[in-house]
Structures are given as structure tokens and as C-alpha cells.
Length: 492
Image (cartoon, rainbow, N blue to C red):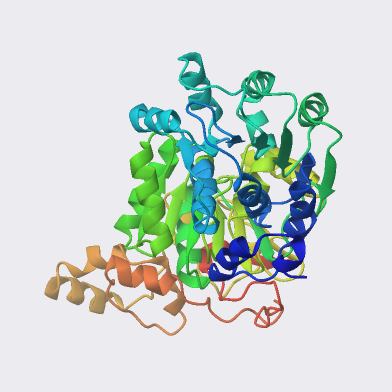
């Protein structure tokens, strides 16, 4: 099936073809024809399936005929976040370039003057977040009684953000005779109730089981102490063939601190979160899309609806508090048929949160490694670490007060060395724990600079003991690189 088989106009098909698309996704193939027939639609689709285009494309053809009127938009699209609203606007500009359609974007964080001016001139498509729309409506700057078509996008996210009362109010001000489309990744009871109240015999389209994760995403979880998170993230960024990555955190303060840390360590990163003004957020997203930076540290403000091509990795630096957020976070990778990888860091405090995620998705997230591998980053005493006699522990993992072992020299030689090189002893005392791996050979080397030691720590560990299975041949969807010392991987 091609887009030409869906009933779209030749003018619109030219824009779709110029954008590089020829074959519709499942949600597009099933949703576009009934939308063109002016039917109400409830679309349930996981993120990254082309959901936005499934309503943007038919809306362009539907809105092609008609007359604009001041203050009275002909259609309304409600989105939960500014970023998602801007994403929808970009789709209209891309696919509607051959049509005479005027759109306005009503979002917070920007000046109201230009938005009011656009409304006064009349718009065909109004894309808005509920908060800004309610603000302008209460000021008498917008009338909704001329709206012929309504789209509620990411309805489950609207529920999470507390927008359902606003949406009910907005729907009550729209004409009863209208076409309504509701799209969501999940369908909790309040959303079901909303659809029954404000929709007319809607056609339900479900292209995948609600809350399922994308088959093109290889996901792992890593049990890690909170103090080891940064070290683990840095190692993965350097060793898992990361092209572009989004790192999600639950807190805005963590986003800021982590971005600064990554920049200090030489990574090309940026940040977006709720405390950043809209202009800066858009600028950071453009830098990420253009390749000026390849790592974006973000709060959940970026989890929904953002369509950035080529995101190879998603890292959940914090296990999400809400299981739905897990689906949407990792959905930033593995989009449009591309393959992606997702890693979720799990501390002891996250046990309940990760259980809820696995209940929602319906399957266990495999632990980092191959086969029945358990990753254990507990502070001390893990059997995984004890089972690796040939691998040296880092100094940070040793019990308090215990110093790294070093090859011993004859007493006279040691005293003579200290007299000749008085600065040598302190330098060696700061040497990394990896140097203790040379105890058996008696080889001693001076301490290396910090960056050189960090690069050394990312190399494969020493050869395992004979009783320990090897993990050299990772299969499809499994770990594809060497394992760092600090991950303490053991086979159970």
C-alpha cells in the first residue's frame, strides 16, 4: 500500500513524496481513510508509529476548502506540551506547503501579541496547549463556536498533567456537530469516559497493544548504586557506539548537574527542562537535531511527541516514576523502522517503579549482559565481584581504610627510591586500582593523568578465570561491547 491508495489529493501526495515518504505506517493506513470520510476516530498507537501524520495529512485536505474568519479557528489541535505542539506545527508546514492554509501556534513561554494578531487575521488550524488556550479564551481573544474539527493528541499525557477538566470545558464550547479525533498510547478509564462523552460513535483503531514497547528497541536494565550512575553512563556513552542519545532524569536539578558534568568530561551535550524558557528550549532542540550536540539531557518535558531522526540511544538515568513515561521515553529511539537501544538505571529504591514498568509493558526487561547475566553494582560483597579473582576492584569499591595493593620491593631498594625521588611515593599512592592487576608480574608504572586513566578503565577486563563462562559472542540484541570493571558482571 502507498499513500496514493489512501485517498489523499495529488497536491498533498507531492508534498509527502518530497518529504521522502512513500509507504504509510499501520496507524496512517488505518486512520487516514475514515478521517477523510469525516468520522470520529480513537487511535491507540505506541509512540514513533507516525501518529502525528495520520491526522495532519487528512486535515490538510479537509481544510483545503473553506473560508477563514477572525477570532474563529476552523480546526483545533490540543497538545499537552509546547514541544509537541511545535512538532505538530512543523508537520503542517512540511506537508501543507502546497496548500493555502494558515495556522497559529498558541503555547506558553512566548509573547501573546503575535498570537493574538494571527487570531485576528483568521486561521484554518489552531494548535494549542490547554493552558494558553484557556487564558486567551477567558480574555475574549478567541471564539470556538466555528471549530469544525477537533484533535486531542497524547490524551493519556493530558490526564497525567491534570488537563482533563480544561479539555472538558473546551469541548463544551465547541459546536456539537464537529469531527473529533483522539489519539493516545494508552486508554485509562478517564480517557475512555472522555471519548464516550464528547465523541459520536468513534471508530477505534489500535495498531498495537496498549502500552507495548517498540519491537525495534533493544532495552536493558542495569542495577546500579546511585553513586555509580555517572560512571556507568559515561562508560556506555563511550563504548556502545552511541551516535545520538537522550538522557532522561526525573528531576530538573539532576538534568542541570548531569549536563554540566558531561560537558566537563568532554561530551557534546545540552539540556531541556521546565525551568528553561521556551526560546532556549527550541534552540537546544535545534542544536540537537542539527548535530551541533549529540547528547540531550532532558526531563520528561521532552519524552512525548518529539520526533528527532537517528536517535540511537535512550538512557533512563532515573527509572521513571510513572510507568507510562517509560514507554514514551524509550520511544524517542527506534522510530520509523530504525533500530535503537535503551538502558534504564535501577537503584534499590527503584524496585517498585521498575516492577510497575514491567507490569505495564507485559514483559521483563532483560538485565544488561548475555543470557542469564546479572549486573550487580552493589557497594561491596557481591558474589559477582568475588567470582572474578583476575579482575581488580577499583579503589572506590574497597572497604573504608583499605589501600590498593602494590608490588613490593626489597626494603633497601624502596628506601633508596624514596630518598632519590621524594615525590614518587605520594604519586603512586593515588594510582588507580587497575595498577594492582600487575602485582603478579611485579611491574610498576607511575600514575597516569586522569583522562588517560579513565580511558584505561573503559578497556576490557583481564581474562576471566577458567571456571567463569566467557561473554565474547553476544548475539543479536545482546551486549555488543566489552564490559567495564566497575559493572561487576557475574554469571549465576
